[in-house]
Image (cartoon, rainbow over all chains, first blue to last red; front, side, top):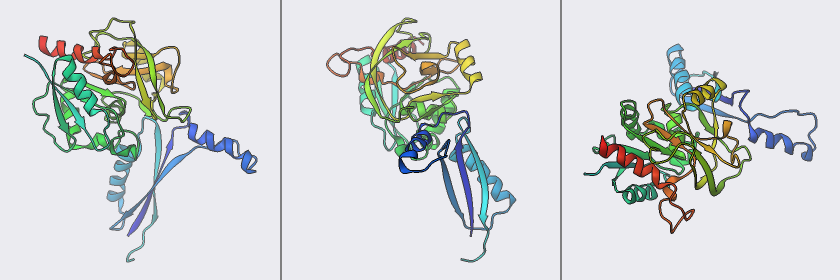
Length: 86
Length: 226
């Protein structure tokens, strides 16, 4: 079993009103000094087999064509744990 | 002789029945298409109706875009078959890369439901030939993810090629770049817009006007005269 994490974020130039709404709520909650918030998505993929280069390439393809819309979003793919057995 | 116009139902589609009605009122033969069926049943054109297909769970239109029926629609649209995407249908067309850009959450984060004035900027597409260029129409607008975005280069290209098909008038309801309400592909057979012409085809309901009927009479004329 391996866990692969795909993080998807709006590109920096794309307006993120959800992140802005979160940021505007912070002073009311007593959090100071946070100047910007961007909201994104995190996908945790549990993979049956250990993730080799070929599998990682497939997951990259999955992220690029489906999990992220590269017109508006950037993504990163990271193997988080690669343990055999349970 | 009339034309067969298909309307796709995905899980979560809401406006398929109104779209089928609009097709019938315009005088064409409505044909229901099912998302899991690759077969388009010899339709001459397709409408992707509004709603929340697959719950918009990943992004609006992102999961529908990979459904079996879309495989055939993408292939046929590239070969020239007319396709109209309304609201969620527009979102599916951008996700399928049949139209450029993408749709995001309204800039004010609220769901909108109201009548919206539009300017028809391109009256030469398969779906707009019954309008005059520059004509003002009013049809319902109802969505959560209606903010059209694309990079500056794409926007400039759309403007230069006359591919901005509709623009919001009076007010920009969702933060769409350059007030864009709808666009067309270069060939003019694939058109997408956020507002809902299919809800404005009878005087009794909707805006009380029939400003949306022109989409369906335009395509019928084109198909019958073809």
